[in-house]
Length: 446
Image (cartoon, rainbow, N blue to C red; front, side, top):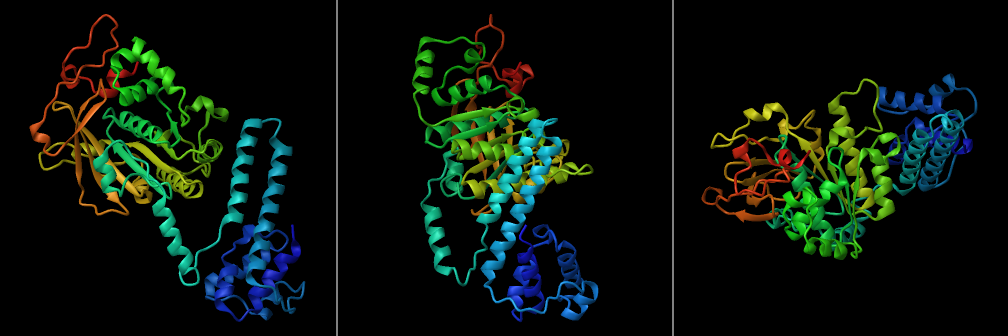
């Protein structure tokens, strides 16, 4: 630790006549201090209570040593950089103690902790607040550069148009939510397939379905192979040739399951590590409730967990330059959320556990299927950077072949969708999925 920088900053806080400089220095909390932690806590508590820092006499009646009457003439950036390095040193010491105390007994947990601390330490060095006044030209050029970056298409062009071309790799946390078995994993796979096809590497977290079965959905979206046949391992020659060609592509789409993570636990630091290692541009979370909150406390509620996870994922989006798509369940109360025709359509207050994910999200879409009509609908519930009139995007959808068609008038179109059967002795039948009492996820998962 650099004890001198701690004392220098305290002296500057107590003696400076520049209120803006004092506010900036006081924005660094006691975690940036070691030897003088009680002193800075006293100063910050006094400031919070009385609206100003203590004068030198008040300070020295509590802390008579050392004398802080000396004047420090360094620039503000010197103090800020010194405090950052001081905190990094403190974190390094804490990490070393963790390794000594628990490393051998819990190696996986210790490595996960070290990765998390390393990310935090590096982020400290990269943070620099933007001045809208003094950095006016810089920020205007940033907007120009951000808008030059390619957006990631979703596979639904009409939705892309509503979001100025697709998902942003500058900062994006898009949320999709629906009742169970309404096609969330299918839509998530559509996002993955489309992004990969356009050269954007994808990371897909699948806590429920094994990667190989998600792969059949990828192939159905990509080349319209019968998913009922692929799911049963019935492969035609053209599919074998398709797989050979697919393996030659450079852009990757990675599926991770809980079994792939240390101690079978997937959290944001682990995902961030994979994002940076593999140059990922789109992260898909197909089940937020399965993730572990790396900031969790013993008495945290589900609401706190979802808030922390989405805040950390959104922060990762900005730090790593990738879009994040989160898929969540709608709760039972969504049955009471009806449209003008009396059909159930969830809203942002029906999201499982908490509405915090919708608050944090840049875009949010409610999903549903009208099974009798073979229609998939997505309603824009929130759009931070687009004109939002709760637009409903309706698509006729043949789930078995991956054929999807935008419908300007959902009432006029009805298609017969082949059942995706797991019975190897029964051929595909042109019947409705809803006619046999199943919905899409039921028909393809064992």
